[in-house]
Length: 58
Image 1 (cartoon, rainbow, N blue to C red):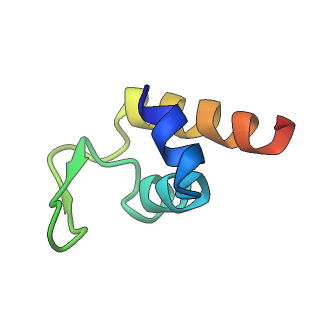
Image 2 (cartoon, helix red, strand yellow):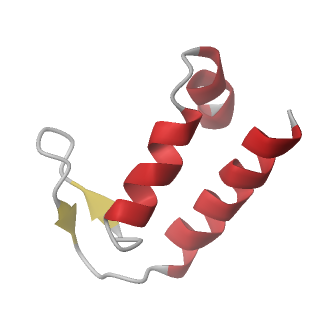
């Protein structure tokens, strides 16, 4: 569902860039975009890879 919304509003590339820019942080502050929590979080990296592949193949 999230991927569909990101694609619909053309934010998919921004989401992937945000994950990379944050160092694959556990989460980011929704107002400032500042990385929070643990860095190098595996699920963030996995989601970014999945979104990047989706963006390239569609």
